Structures are given as C-alpha cells and as structure tokens.
Length: 596
Image (cartoon, rainbow, N blue to C red; front, top):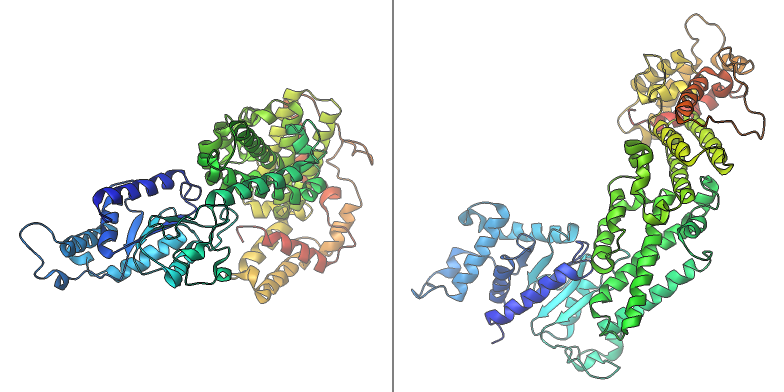
C-alpha cells in the first residue's frame, strides 16, 4: 500500500541519509521540504522523524488546525482512528515546540506555523525539514531550501510551482536545487535526451519548462569539470613545482610583508577562495556516485588528489596572507566537506586556526605557534617567516587608523627585521623570538611601555602618541570629545561637526603656563632634536640595525617605543599644519576609538 508504514520508513531513512551526507544538508547551510500526499500521512512522517536526530528540527505545516470538535464521535473503542491519531500527533508536536501542556498548546497552531517558517528561512541548520501537503508550495520564498522530496501525485502548474521552491539561489554554494521524485512523476525516460513535458508537466509547452529540470548526475559531472578547468586556469601561472612557496609568491607577495603586493594580489586570492570552495562542493556533491557518473577508478583517484591539492593550497594562502581569519565564519561547512570527502591529514592541523588567527596564536604561544602551521608551510623556514611577516603587516595595516604614529613605528621595525632576515644577519630561532615580540607589541599598543599615569585608556594613549607627546593636550582633547559626543555621532554630520569644534577648541587653547599657540609650539619643537635621544637616526636608505639576541631585541624595541614618544622630531605636528588640519586628523583618530 502506498502509505504503508514500511514504505514511509524507507523514505524517512532515505532523507536521513541525505541529511548526513549531502552538501548543504550535512553542513547546515541548506534544508529541505517533503511534500506528502495527505495530512494524515504528513503526521505519520513527522512521528517517524521525531524519533530520530531530526527531532526538534522538523515540523508539519498544513491547513489543518487541531480542535476538539474535529474528533467528536471518533472513538471506536478499538484504538485510534486516523482523525484521532492526526489530532494527537499535531497536539504533541505543538506541546513539544512551546514546552507546555498539550491542552494549551493545541490552540497555537497559527503561531507555530509562523515560527517554524521563520526558522526554516533564517536558521536552516535548526529547522532542516518542513513536511507539507498543499501549503507553502506557491509564494513561499526560502533561499536555503535546496532539496524537494515529492511523495504526492502532482502535475502541471502545481508541480511547476513546487519545483520552484528549491531553485532560489543562496550564495556560492547553491548552484541549483534537487528534486527527489518518489512517485515517478517524470517517467524517467530512457535515452540521452529527457523531455519532461511527456510526464507530469505535459500541460506545458516544451519551451516553457526547458531547463527547469535536468539529469542530476549529468549536470553534476558537467559542473565538476567546468570548475576543475576554472581552478586550473587560475593557478596555471604558478611556477613549477607548484609547491607551497610558489603558491605564496603568486597569490600573496613575491616579497613578504610588502603591503602593496598583498593588496594588488587580493583579487587573485579571492578568486582562488571562491573557485576552490566551488570545486570542493562540486566534488562532494558527486563523490558518492562518481562511478555512476561515468568516472573510472583512476580518474576518481586523480579527482580526489586534485581537490585535496587545491584545498590545501587555498588554506595555506589564506593563512599566509592574513585573510584566513576574515573568512573563518565560512570554514565549518568547508571543514565538514574536507573531513567527509577528502579526509586530508592536515585537516586537524588546520583546525587550530578555525577559532583564532595566526597573530592570536603567536601572542599566546610565541615562537611555538610555528608548530601549529600546516606542514607545507612548517617545512620551510622561509615560508614560515613570510607567512608571519604577511600576517603582521596585515595587522599593522588594519590597526593603523587606531593609532597611526604607533603603527608607523611598528611598520619601520618590521621592515628592519625583514631586511635583517633576508641578509642572513639573524639566526632563524632568534628571528622567531624577535618577530613574536614585535607581534605582541603590535597587538597591544603601549603594552609594557611607559606612559604617564593619567593616560589610562587606549584612546588617551593614541592621542598622546599623535599629539607630539603632549600629555596636557591629549587629556584636553579626551575631555572635549567625551563632553561633546552624542549617541550615534559618527553617522550624523551635525554631531560630527560638534565634536570637531570641541577638538579644535581644546587644541587651540594655551596649555597651562604657556603662551605660544599650539601649532606654532609643535612646529618649534619639531625643529630641534630631543635632548633625551642620544642614538643616531639612520641615514636615508640605511637599514636600522637590530640586535641579534632576542632579549637585546626586546630591550631595543622598548627603547624604540620610548624614543618614539620622547622624540618631538618623530611625532610633532609640522609647522605648516594649521589648526583645522590638525583637528581633522585628530577627528579621524577619535572616530576609530571604540571608547568614544
């Protein structure tokens, strides 16, 4: 019988298998709809799913609204009738959802429907399956819906509309939806050309439904081959032997730490990330059925090796460029596909960076962070150095608006350290200790350094660094900003203007005990060397010498930072900068301080 328990159980098992293996279903990025032949059958489906891992993540949405009046006179004394059982299953479903007694929950069917539809659209991983009969087959827009299971006789307009529920695109990982037909609605014509107008869509002209459906395996193979060629074409310029170092030079920077090269190569990297992710999804979609799709054993091995190669290259480029942490929100789905279909040995190693960046790992572990790098990078001292340098450069660029003067100094120190490494003037272990120290300094401006006690917040220290070590001016500007700022001031031109006027007034006011105007005072100090600085500044084109010993480097780094604050030559505003220019510059700085 069509609705026999065994047949329904087989369909449930089929759907559960897909939920654990199919792309988008397994990683929670997509979900599915099951069209049942009747409300009673939908309830039986739900009852079976409620005993599996889909409990709490599936729901029935139909026109049925359970009411005690519906079951009046239904008791036969010989067990539950269909109506009684339908009522009981619906009532239990509502009670479980609202966590209240069935007698109360039974009246909240409309509220339940709205809630599960919203979760199906907004949280596909938490509402993985909707069981429907007639509702939601037209006009229901849920881009996450990727699989449509049909166990109902349908045809023409109704069927066409139902299929359209899964053809909404939803990001790069959804090329098309899938229709699983348990009723043989399309007659599965033999031969190379499938004309679906001969089946349940015969009420349409051929041109009206052309392209609506296609052979799944043929379409999947075509998509996989197209994606392979696209990735190969992108990576074709990578120099032989196309190892880790070659990929990093081509996609990151030929000279590590070069901000201009990292920026110029960003479009290449984004293309690599996008195409490799598409390749992995295309491979995963076909992996269980590669033989059925016409691939030989040798070809299957080649496909897997290529997919693993490009997946590793992508991860190493992300990590080396500093892009990795920016994209980590998309990684759980990718990690699932890699672990399921590629099972790379590096999967566990790369997972160290799923929740933290390389920079965070260096701050936490120092030079020991190198042990967590992928083998392709870890096996080369040069690749390790270039990866760290690129990440520190990225950090400096990203954080520079928060304290431009401080990070200008960090950039100079990084340049000097890179130059020393390239010249072979520092041993590898000493280099790692030095770069770890620099990284820690770059992540905590002012950490471990000597600031006046009154400068007790990052914003005050940033003002101090960028106002020529003038503590009084820094404190005055801080007070002015706090007094003049209003809620949402950054997005309101009038409120921004109010803050700027306050900053300008604080800058223009004479410091206690002084008469010269602020800008002129800074200009005068900029014209003479700092009495506290006894070291000679490097000549033009000369690389600052760095001590080889890590402890000496740390002390020298602290000295550099102290000199940075003590040197009016380095930090004073130029005499040509008028008060409006200074106010604009400080306003930009203030906008980047979280505490304001």
